[in-house]
Structures are given as structure tokens and as C-alpha cells.
Length: 450
Ligand SMILES: Cc1cc2nc3c(=O)[nH]c(=O)nc-3n(C[C@H](O)[C@H](O)[C@H](O)COP(=O)(O)O)c2cc1C
Ligand code: SF4
Image 1 (cartoon, rainbow, N blue to C red):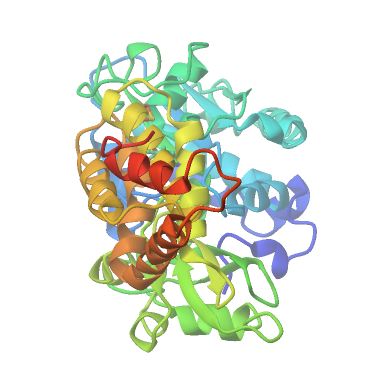
Image 2: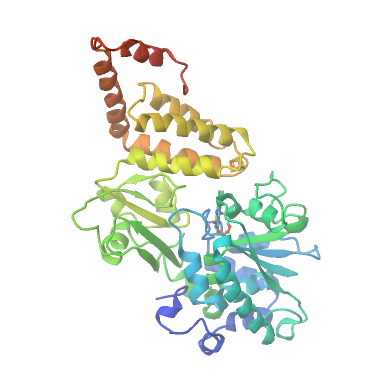
């Protein structure tokens, strides 16, 4: 059953007439006939959790907005910046009115004065299409002044970012929306509080997939939503599958589907001649897991991923096969985070630099026996101490790879030791500076870097 990808059952649902002929904007109509607080109660009862990564209960988030403030905003997070995530674009392209309706229901529930859809810069063509849909909704009195005769006014705007991973982080997104450098804010105040949101006004920031699920909940009722998925992780989720599989793509499935079902039944199994080695359940930012039977049979839910010491995140499932050197994979992710760190806080700015430096020398087979401890030390000093979660995200790939694949790190470092012994053999007559001295100098170098 599709909630987000209704185009699979109803062709042309991206068109306003087709959308409305199939229950489109009924959820908004129902909402404006209710008290705003009742709408929040319905969303709370559905158990919907945020699909942007953290899985925070959506109705609870909406309830944090103070009623007494006259100006309030909804910011739709359409930055879609996590490596391996490509669901929000498909949701917006194939069913744009569903997102507009979901955002308007949220806006009504908190009595927002405007909605901003923040899209990554590369989505400029999509922003153009959304603008046309917003105009269409406005012509039909579903957006703008006196929405559906309720006396409530709420325009919707699109806004393009300039393409930075950090602008997907909610407070950096708000900075960017205000035209400032996209860097996370110090919290508290949080976005829902006065002083913490857009232009200092209370703001709900929700992901595209989260808001795209809301029209179904309002139309069909919270019980219908809760009937799908598991007790603590209700509803469907779009899983973005890529890597070494036959059929990479987006799969909307009930939460609770196992890795094995997702990868082998839906994504067609492993690429020709390859076996599965490891899985990144949440793109670059979630800890890697080995693809053993326990992991493959784990249901994809927020709680089951936590039990595996990883996270569901935005469910960008990257499948690694037996040919992949996981140390190399961890190095690539480390380079990504080093590049994307905004530099505002020291543990993340410096830590990503040093992690890259040490893991790169391990990959070059120049690692030192103490390097694994050194990485653990740097990474642990980055977690839980930074302004935003990017510091933790950057530490995760290496820490989890060391924990789950210690032999692969060991193998690289042993290679380095063997190479050093080779170099230390009696020098050829032509060598003016015996390599043994270089090896000895390297070994005596300070613990971090050269
Ligand atoms: C570094 C970083 C990048 C993020 N990128 C995204 C993103 O691209 N899209 C998104 O929806 N949430 C992203 N988030 C999560 C948002 O900060 C926020 O939790 C989310 O938009 C809330 O919406 P939700 O409650 O609907 O999940 C990111 C978080 C961090 C720390
Ligand atoms: S953790 Fe990194 S990305 Fe986040 S604010 Fe600090 S420096 Fe910037």
C-alpha cells in the first residue's frame, strides 16, 4: 500500500485535478473544520515520527509552538543532503500537491503565518514546478488569504539553497533561509521557541517525507496509519537503496520490513557474482553494520536499528559487497565530513581534519600500530560535544568500522609494518640516505600526522 508514492496506483497524480479527484486536499478541509489543537492530537495519535533523520514524534514537535505568539512559521526541509538519500525529490516530483497539503495542515495546526519550502540548489527545476502548483492551490483557495473560508491567511514560498550538506541541519537551514552563512545556531533557544526559529519566531522544521505522510493521516484517521508498521515505528517509510544491488531505487514499505526483504526481495539481490559484506543503513552518517544473519533479519525500525548500535536516519541504505575495502569506505566518508564541516566548532573542524589525515595514511599502508587507538581517541573527543550532530556523524563511520571490522584495519597496519621491515633491509649501494633512517624518523615522529 502506498501513502507517499500514490503515483504507483494513480497515474498523473501530480496534476491538481487528478490529485483532488482522489481525495487530495480532503485532509486540509477536515483540518480547517477542527480546532488547531485537535489536528495536533490526531498527528500525535498516529505516532508519525520525523523522517529527516532523528525520528522525533511529529505531533509532539508541533505542540511545542507557543500559541500566544502572533508570528509563526513552517520550514519544509527539502535539502536532501545525506549521501545515498534520494527520496524527497521523488516525493515532490511525483506528487507535489501532497507536500503542499501536508505543509498547510502543519501550518494550520500551529496557526503559522507563512510556509517556506527550502530546497537544495540543485532542485531549481523542481522549485519552478512547485511554484506552479502553489499558484494552482492559491487559485483554489487552499493557500494564501482566508484559506477555505477559515479566516486564516498563510502564503507558501519556495527558497533555493546553494548546496551545502550542513544546510540540511535545521538551524543552519534557518540561517540560510534568512540569507546568512549556513552554520548551525547555538541552542537553546530551539526553533520552536521564541528567538530560536526563522527571524526569531517559533518555527516547525519538518522533512518532506514527514509532511507528505500527513494528508493520509488526516484523511483516513490516525488508526489507519498506526495499523501499518510497528507499535513504536508506525506507517510506511521510503527506503533509498543503492550500492551493490540489482535494482537500486526508492522503495516505500511498511516500517518493520527486514534488511533481507528489502535487499533481496525488493532490490533484486546482490549484483552479479557478489556477496553482501556490510550495510550503511543511514548513508554516511549512521554507523556501518556487518551483513550477518542477525542484521539481515532485523526489522527496519527506529528501535531495532538502535539495538544494532546504528540508526535508521533517513533510511538511505547503502549496500557494500565483498570486494569493498571497508577502511577505504570509511576514509571516503571521513573526507566527505571534513569537506562539509562548517568549521564553527573546534572538535568537528579539527577532528575531521585529523581523522582524515590518520585514516588516509592507514589506507596508504603507512599506518602506525598506535593509529587505531589514536583514531578512537580523536573520534571520541568529537562525539556529543559539538553544536550540531555533524561532529557525531563524522566520528561514526570510523568508530563503527573499527568496532565491526577490526581485522581490516589491522591488515592495513600490518602491511605498513611489513613494508617498513622491507625498507629496513640493508640499503642498496646507490642509496645515499638509507631508507632505514626514514623509517626510524617516521616511527619517532609525533603521534598525529607528519
Ligand atoms: C548535518 C545534518 C544534516 C541534515 N540534513 C538533513 C536533510 O538534508 N534533510 C532533512 O530533512 N533533515 C536533515 N537533517 C535533520 C534536521 O536537522 C531536522 O532534524 C529535520 O529536518 C527535522 O524534520 P523531521 O522532524 O520531519 O525529521 C540534518 C541534520 C544534520 C545534523
Ligand atoms: S559540529 Fe561541525 S558542522 Fe556542526 S556546527 Fe560544529 S563545526 Fe559546524
